[in-house]
Each structure stands twice: as structure tokens, then as C-alpha cells.
Length: 89
Image (cartoon, rainbow, N blue to C red; front, side, top):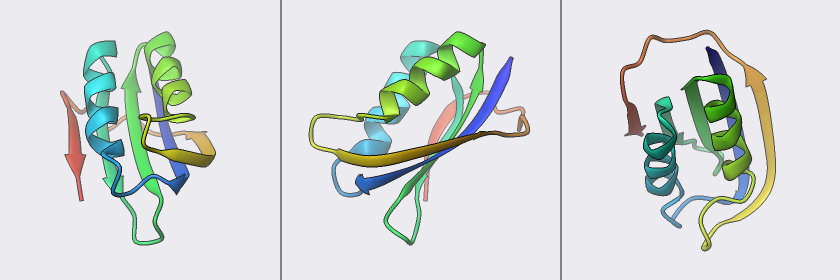
């Protein structure tokens, strides 16, 4: 099991990035959350099987077609024990 927190920057708010991230996470069986940050970035917390979390992070490097990702910074995180993947904030 793996837990990662990733900050995605670029044109990532107002383009349904959070909704698409939730959809992809659910397809992969990843739990956690995604939220908009006040600085215009999107923060993703993902937990699950290593390959599934890695696949979600890789998907976030591009995001949905309407997004323009400039950068993604990921780091290991503590597991929160989430049971689903939610859009917050």
C-alpha cells in the first residue's frame, strides 16, 4: 500500500480537474481526496496499491483534455485510512 500527496499547477482550476481525478481514482480503486488550493493549484491525496497510485499520479501529469498542467510535485504521505475518493474544497 502506498500514500502520495501531489500538487498540480498550471491551468487546473475551472476545467473539471477535480471531477475527472475522482473518476479516474475510482476506476483505479484509489482512495483519498482532491481539492483546489487558494494559490490556483490542485492538491491530490491518493492511497492504494502502489501501481494504482502511480497510475493516478501519472494521469495527473496531464489531467483532463481541458487542463494545461505545468508541473506536478509528488511526495510520500501518511495514510489517512480513507474509504473512498472525494472532491473537497
